[in-house]
Image 1 (cartoon, rainbow, N blue to C red):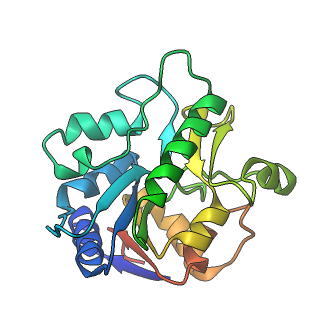
Image 2: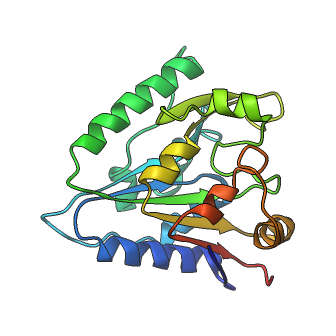
Length: 228
């Protein structure tokens, strides 16, 4: 795991992802992140390759029909004229959809899209929470963590009273570890100083600090505005 400090972390992160997109040999799948990581989208440039496909999907989602809460709806509103929006698998919520039916629908839609790609390079942009969570993967007791983020599942729904948005959905840590070629972390503001320092200086179990999966990954870079 490499940590890069920049005065313009969103731009630096977007530029790095753009380079990964440009250097990919075949099709590309890129997982995006919500929250402050939406700032990165402005700086992602999609290269023009007639023979190659590049598609995007939110790596985690807030299961809400509210346009100010749902990550995909925020992306579409904020970047309505960006090519990324037109190439992103929608993860908005249907009326009366439960977290279980939502996560199953998105999982099926994703699997169909993935099968259509030719030996894709997979990139994941992941935010990091001050509590050590990443994407929609949260610290939980070990047994509950295993049951929630099953090792044989791609994408799951998560409910928790301690979450800002009670209903979330996310790619699982096992899927991210096995299939993602490049993880790009994004952690900005002084509130992230402590967790970034902890990632550098100590190790925890994945259920205690899910952001450990970034540190464990074979190709991971974290961008921040903090000097560590």
